[in-house]
Image (cartoon, each protein chain N blue to C red):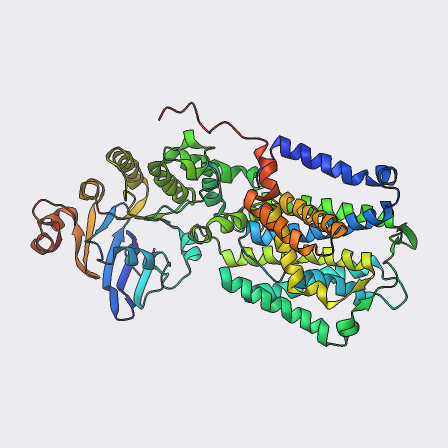
Amino acid sequence: MSADDSVILETRELTKAFGGLVAVNTVSVTVRKGEPHAIIGPNGAGKSTFVNLLTGHLPPSSGRVLFRGRDITGLPTHRISRLGIGRSYQKTNIFPTFSVFENCRLAAQSRLSTSMRFFRPAVTLAEVNRQAEQAMEQAGLAARRDRTAGTMSYGEQRQLEIAMVLATRPELLVLDEPLAGMGKEESERMVALLKGLAAQYSLVLVEHDMDAVFSLAATLTVMVNGTLLESGPVEQIRASQAVQDAYLGDGAEAY
Amino acid sequence: MTRLPRPAAIVLLALLALLAAYPLYGSLLFPEKYAFLLQKVTGIMILAIMAMSLDLLVGIAGMVSLGHAAFFGLGGYMLAILSPQYEAADIWVALPLALATVAAVSAVIGALSIRTNGISFIMITLAFGQMGYFFFNDSRLAGGSDGAFIYVMPTVEIAGVSLLNLESKLTFYYVVLGAFVGAFLLLRMVLASPFGRVVQAIGVNENRVRGLGFDPDRYKLVAFVIGATIAGLAGFLGAAQYGFVNPAMLSWHQSGQALVMVILGGTGTLFGPALGAFVLELARMGFESVTEHWLLPMGLFVIAVVVLLPKGVAGLLLQLERKPPPEAEDGA
């Protein structure tokens, strides 16, 4: 149990091995409320696997994950979601044949104590509708309400990805490369959106775009080859010689 | 489930009116074949109920089952088992008991099957279906491979007063029509409900459903049981109509035929598979009347429909209302 109330998420020596390959190796990270936390590292560093361990998409080989002091290691994905960790995906993961509203409405509906209700039409659930509308508003999609999700631009689909997470009313957002594949303009709009979210939610962000990371994050965790290289306030990481050598390079460029 | 587009709804209502009024015009239009067609259409409506129930699994929840006939057959067999020999069963006892049995059996089969996906799910439901077939084929229960007769239609009485005489072909026709429309409306209601929305979402992107905090297995299991129970109702009505059950009711041929109806009609639309049942059965009737080698033109017909109408008969109807391209005014 964590005695520290400011800690929202904590991993203890979290490890995931796929056969002989150790994708995540004894990684211990502390995420605090109100301190946007970015996880960076070169391709293959184990960032995505790490996120999948946090949200139950993969079971860890060993180690612990604590959310608000509660051990959530090994819980199934849907239980972790209901505890208040909302996750977005690196590859757009929406319901392309549904309208934007229905995508968000379904996400909001997931917060009902049960959806085993068979008689009243789902669209008459006023509170669920309200949450869905609010999430669309937050993510800047209100004007796209009735659009079939799969027919929107890539950037808008990425926004929808975020809107769906917001509609589940999470305490902690875990965003896996929200800027992946976006053009410059789309990226700028997304960064502005994420800045707004960073002020309202606790945030874990996996991202390649260093400009975005430095403008959003308060705390950085650097992973290399599955291990934690360094974790701490942005300025400390920027100044770290080890990080400079291993990853950032002099121009702070990724890859 | 979204609202039906107006033109499609109008066509469906017109077809329904055609069915409801058949006893009025049928004897004028086809004086020699009236009784035959009345029974034929009754049978098709029963198959349409089964096809719609399978669509809930296949077209909506994305669970392609090749064992659905097991529940159709079980519903029929329950009527045979619950009917005293040479006497009528009481429908208020026989029907609920038959449906409860189908629901219970499907809950067990479903719980063992739904954790698999795709081909594995097809194979496991096929295996369970064939187990059901051989259970009735090889046991002494209800006549084994010979099947069993139901000599008397169930009674529909309240306090000893007969409400409906199912022995009347006309009455039975309307009872089946009521069950057919009722099953459609019930499924529509379920699909519009919070439960139904989750099931539809599972059919589109199961992993995302899980990520949103739903446990997909629970919803798939309940959908499986609902679909199976409605198929059981169809089987119960089928057994009542023909006064006979045999193991073939449970066989994979029967499952496969229902699947063809679903695909031909248009998966995931409910009304499509119902139309598919009519198209398939009427085509069969047509080809049968022309040649005894009807299976060949029948096969060609099915292939032609699938190739020409990738979204099935329902796709045709839904095309009647082609909306203007969305947000044409959008400059972006």
